[in-house]
Image 1: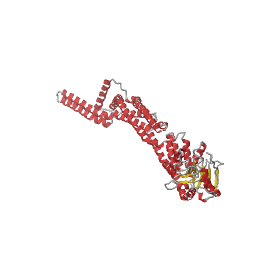
Image 2 (image 1 turned 120 degrees about the vertical axis):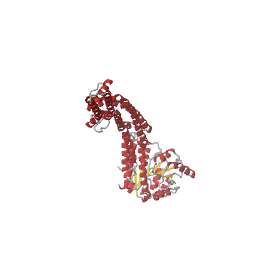
Image 3 (image 1 turned 45 degrees about the horizontal axis):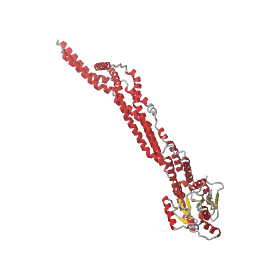
Image 4 (image 1 turned 30 degrees about the vertical axis):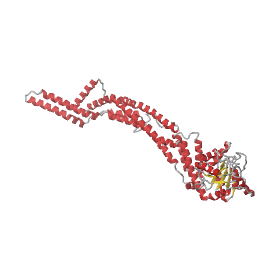
Length: 558
C-alpha cells in the first residue's frame, strides 16, 4: 500500500478506536475509496481514462463509434440500451486499461483494440446512462467515472437542462477534467447561441475544470453523420466534430496528459482525505478537543475546592488529638526540668480534656487507617459528583458533532483506586494512609535540643539554690518572694519554650491536608485530564498524518 493510502488507513483505524467512526454504514465506502486511491497511486500513467457520459438517448455510443471510425458499441433509439461499458484502447495501453478498470470489467465486456497513434494516450469508455431506470446501470457508470481522468459529457438541445445532469456535474465529476459535446445537432431543436449561453451559465457554478486553460471546451456535433462520413463518405452536417477530434488528438499531448494525471492524483488524494475526515468526523472532534480538555480541568479545579473545604472541616476534629499524641511522645524524650514541666503540663491537659491517650506507637497503625478512611471520604463524594457531571458534559459534546461518546467516556476511569503505581504506592487510600503514618511518627528530641531547652530553667534553679545556700550560711531567713518569683519565672520560661518548640517538633495538620489535597489532584489529573489530553493529541496527529501529499514523480518511480 502506498504512503497516502496507508496513512488514511491508519486514520480510519485510529478513529475507529477513538471515535467509533466511520459508522458501519460509511465504512465500506471509506475503504473502497482508499482502495481506489491506492490503485491510482500504484498505476500512475501517462494516458487518460476518458469516460463518455450522458443521459438517455443523447448518442454516447454513436460518439465513441464516430471517434473510433467504426461500430464498436451498439447504439439504439431505445432508452437505457447500453448496460455495460465498451472500451476503445490502443494496443500498447490495453494492460493499463484492464488494470485501471479491474473489478468493473466482465469477461464478455467489449474491449476494442486499435493502433491509431493519435489516440494512443486516450482510453475511451462508453458508459450506461446515468439517468436511466436501471439501478445497476447507475452503479456501473459511477464505478467507471470515479476511476477516470476526464469526462466527455454528451448532451442535446432537448436534454441539456436536466436536474440529473447537473447533479452529476455538481457531485460526481469532482476534480476530473471535462469536455462538453452538444450532439444530434442535425435533428430536433437547433443549437442556438441562446441555448449555448444558457448552458454555459448554468454549469459555471459547478467549478468544473477544463483540460487546459480556463474555458470549458464545448463542441456542437453530429456523431451519426461523422460516423457515416468515415464509413462510406455519406455527407451530412457533422458540425464541430473535426474540432473535437483535433482537440483530443493535439491538445491532449504527452505533456498535457502527464500534467493532468499528476494533478488528478493530488486532487484525488485531497478528495479522499476530505471524505475520510468527514466520515470520521475528525475535524469536528478536533474542534471540540480543547473544550473537552478545559472541561476536564475545570471539573478537577472545582472538585479540589470542595475537597479542600471538606479536608479543613475534617482536620479540625482529628488534628488536635494527633498533635497532642505527638507532643506527649516528644516530651517523653526530654530530660531535665523542662522535660519534667512539659510532661506534667501535657498530662494535666490530657486529664482536663477527659482523654485516655495510649502510646503513639501502639496507636499509630490503627490511627492511620481510621484517619485515612475519614480523609478519603472528604474526596470520594465530590469526585463522584464531578465525574457524573463531566461524563454528561462529554456526552453532550459528542452528540453535538455526531460521534459516539462511548470511546470518549471509557477514557475516564470511574474508580479512584486505579491510580498507577507511583513509588510503590498503588491506590489513593494507600497513599493517604502512608502520609498519615508519616505524621504519626514519634518525634524524639536530640541531645542538643535537650541541653539547649534546659539551659535557662537549670540556670534559674541553680540561682535559687545558690540564694538558699548563701542565706543559710549567713544565718539569714530566705525571702519567700524570691522563691515564688523564681518559680513563676521558671514556669514562664518553660511555657514560652514549649510554645515555640512543640509546634516546630510536632508539626501541624495544615501541611498534611495540603499533601492529601495534592494526592486527590494528582489522582484526578491522572484519571480524567491526562487521558482526554492524550485523546486530543492523538486526533491532532491524525490530521498531520492524513495531510501528507505524495510526490507523483516519486510514486511513479516506486
